Length: 206
Image (cartoon, rainbow, N blue to C red; front, side):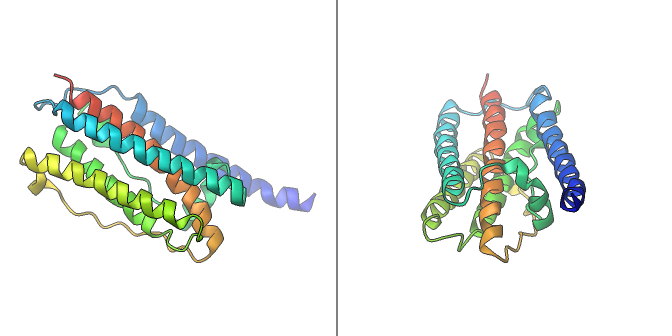
């Protein structure tokens, strides 16, 4: 009974944190996309982004499934409080979902977000011998996607507007933290890519 009482505040905090993050992403997804105010992006760029996004999402799902099967870490929402305490950041995409949608800002945030997830995946080094190849593959494909965004920005003469961002990466001190972090990072990455592709598809429309 005492254990149940002691755990209740933690469960409540985890639920509150999960609801806050859900509201954040739901708000971004629900906000109607406004005018990009620029020429549309080429369809070839959207096609390449779509292929890269699908590949990364499939690999993220594979990582989650392996973590679930092997370590019984199956529910990202149950790890929300741990993710907060570990300092796992979220990549913002406000410039891609607000009514003030603007091409340069959106592409800059996409590029910065992909580099953030590349760093987070790198922080999972040593997660386990069985999972390391999947994490390495994810890291490489996320970096390639970031390069695609960068090249498009260069083609549009926007690369000089890109400002480097400094983000503190989590310091995982145990195998469990890396594995729990892997579940959360894979989940966050999928949400990021879903919203990113929606914005890119809009920006390619004439």
